[in-house]
Length: 70
Image (cartoon, rainbow, N blue to C red; front, side):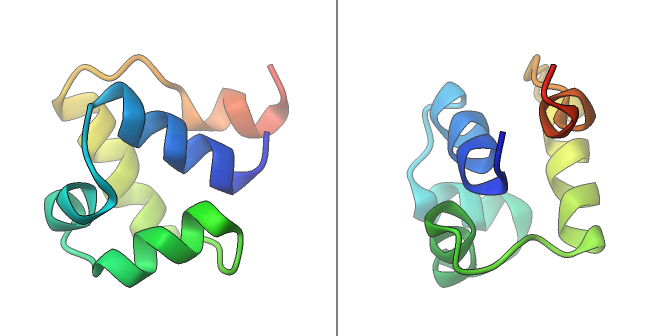
């Protein structure tokens, strides 16, 4: 699965708008929008923030498995 789909899936499972998800991660709305449209990929720091957010909020999405195509 591509980054755009993974980010969008996490955000929609949490019932958050792009703006709200950006606030939760401490990034801009534009950043989340670019991730979801495939214009950019999250940095390693951003990936850590996303992974921590998923763990903290019991979001059952394993980014590593999604990237591996499982």
